[in-house]
Length: 118
Image (cartoon, rainbow, N blue to C red; front, side, top):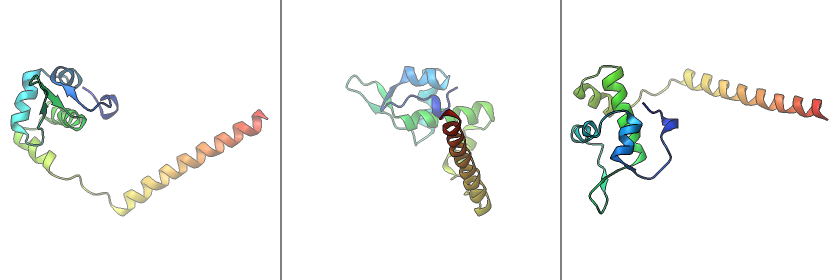
């Protein structure tokens, strides 16, 4: 199954591509289209389904919830519809500090390399 990083950065995907990326058969994708209102593919002139990247990511999330976490279709719908819980102020601060620390260490390493190289 694909992660956010492995989904190509394209405008549109055909059903065969999405099937390979998500790891399910095309008929499963067509079924999920009917069950999840958020997925509305466009149609090409030849009537082929064209999915956007956000649809592919949603399919990946649906597959993870249904197959890995054993949600029902209804439970999956609720989980997708529910917004992610907001981080507390403490969590946000610790994330920010961890990021700043990593950036400072990277700058320090670059300075040390330049000192040793010259």
